[in-house]
Image (cartoon, rainbow, N blue to C red; front, side):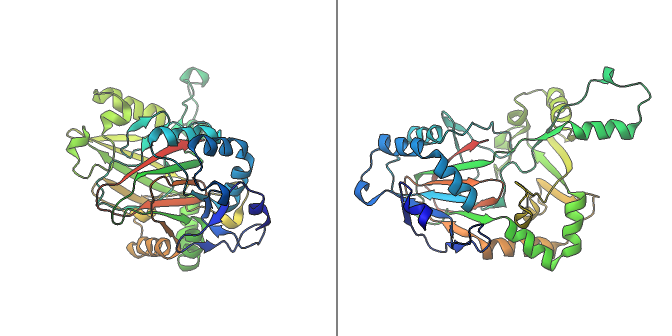
Length: 358
């Protein structure tokens, strides 16, 4: 590819890469794009790699926008601090993580990708796809008899989304078996769901989805350790303070089951168009997860989602995805607006780190 020939990297291959048929330039771009050190620099030192990143930010941005996912392989990254240096070199502003998944800060802008047990798979999703903040207008700004409908309309106007546009993953310890990070062009799900379930997709696009999640008081109270405890989520040990934060900052509905906090959010926009790309509508929701003991998912009007539709959604993902088999030092960069990711179960040890950017 002409553009790639002018890049500071050489192109590599991994199994199951896919040709992007809808690529804007129609030039057979592979998803994901795999980037290796130049032939004359196969033993590139970290400082040289970081400098190359800094000097080629514009090119990297353009390739990420075109392809959706980049895999850097064969570069001299060994530690969280090495990965943090690459994150900083890319020049993207840090995004504060506000999701419900349990993870820990490791170094600088670097977090663990997930604290969930390694034997548990994590299904395909966009990071923080259901995180929305609300800025409530002050009551003094309203006339006392302002209608309930108008109040709600004004509240909706003041909502703003809070998901990262870019995700970075780094392999510090590669698993002996399994543990791949799978990636997927999100619009593939939208397109095939529209073909099989057109009425359902129209309803999801019009009405959104409702989410409910149950959070334990402490992480150790949840044997699966998939979701943060409400203490961690709201940074308080006080139930009333946590409830106030949930309602005022997120407009979530709150109920309690003993010490467990139940949060309901939505309905949320669940099929998204970014940058005016109507042909690449993102399946920006967690329908693939279905309903579990700790998460309940329904259509925007509260009605149930047909189980066969959830099953087909997961089938599409498996048929359209690419599994990235981790090697130590790998860095995977994805555009979180257009690309979903998932985690395969693995045997220990496995240590994948993550960073979130605006």
